[in-house]
Amino acid sequence: MPTENLTLTVPDELDGRRLDQVLAHLSPQHSRSRLQGWIRRGYVKVDGEILRQRDSVVLGQTIKIEAEYEIQDEWEKQEIPINIIHEDEEILIINKPAGLVVHPGAGNPGHTLLNALLYHYPQLERVPRAGIVQRLDKDTSGLMVIALTPSTHTHLVEQLKQRLVKRQYEAIVHGVMTAGGTVNAPIARHHIQRKRMAVKESGKQAITHYRVITKFAAHTHVQCQLESGRTHQIRVHMAHIHYPVVGDPVYGGRKRLPKNSSESLKQKIAEFSRQALHACELGLCHPQTGEAMIFSAPLPEDFKTLLDALKNERRY
Image (cartoon, rainbow, N blue to C red; front, side, top):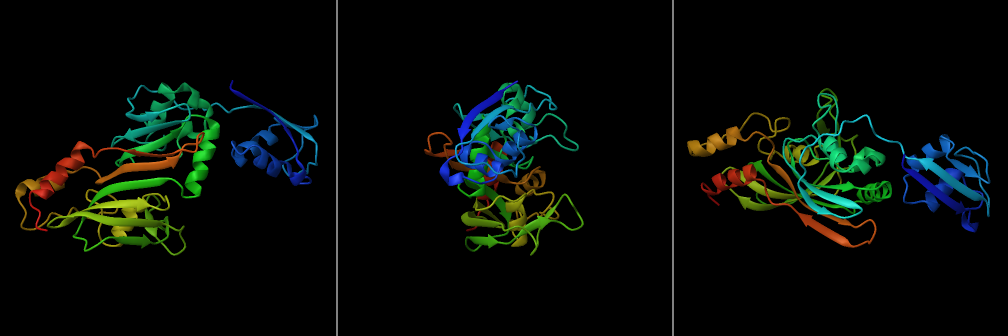
């Protein structure tokens, strides 16, 4: 069983503060929820005594943590290939293919990215969510970062909260955009269809910046950059401004086949079996070194094939 053993001393500036607050300051490598769980389980002692989260500690007291990481053994390890872009002792950057679910859930108990990660990296049993800090939809391809240690997971989650992680996507949308822009529209769960998201005033802030890469006869190849990371954000925002992502089965409406186009192009659009959305660039600060790192992933073949078909009939 993986363990954590720490001995800390309460400094002057934290004199009289709550135990959980003091631990959060002294052990920033761990999330507050993890530290609170250790306090509840009795893994934390102050001068040899077990205290509650809200109990105060004073200058000079010794805090000892002798904790066991919770092992996530409810998920099966499965031999599924992973396309690795970068790997070091702290992080893993992968290029997820379209069709691969990220996390087990209702209807997808296995054969997910998480199952694959546990097979290739058994140490991820002790990392929350097997190191996953962000998600891509099943049929969205592209870059994801995986934390290989609990402290790295905490660090990356904090980077995401502070909007320090750069996430750039490419998409093909229906309609011809005149120019790029920004969608600043809050997103929340749909009030009737609970698996869908929707733009709602009561939702959480969501900001997507987009720019035009190429205009076609009835479509646009765009680049999107997330300032926030809500579920289905790009898909919801593009549909909201009436440029839904090609192939989107949830927000795209009925399949749109451009008039006066060749039968070959119409067939390729009709047969495109997923949303045309790819996470092409990921930027972050390395959790250990602080180095700014940027990773990129090329467009997948199905995306390139559709682009080639559109270019053959480009009128702009």
